[in-house]
Length: 67
Image (cartoon, rainbow, N blue to C red; front, side):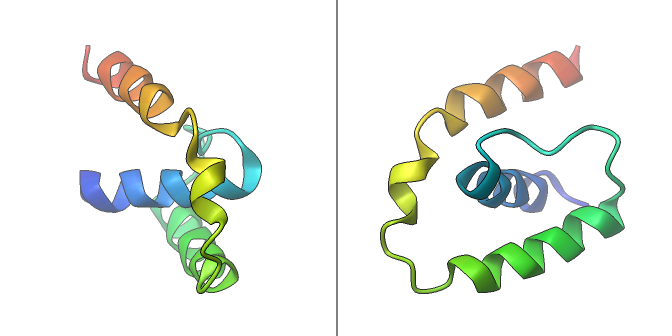
């Protein structure tokens, strides 16, 4: 799975659950969740308010994983 897809999946998970996807999840599990949450959030113009804090959390996780 490419990094952009993984980041978008984490963003949707963050909006719904308030934290990033656990590292133990497989790519298959992430894609299933992504499809489900995408349908769940489609047309919900208020979901962007729940994105607060995602970017710093993603940067922290991404920088930690790259080391």
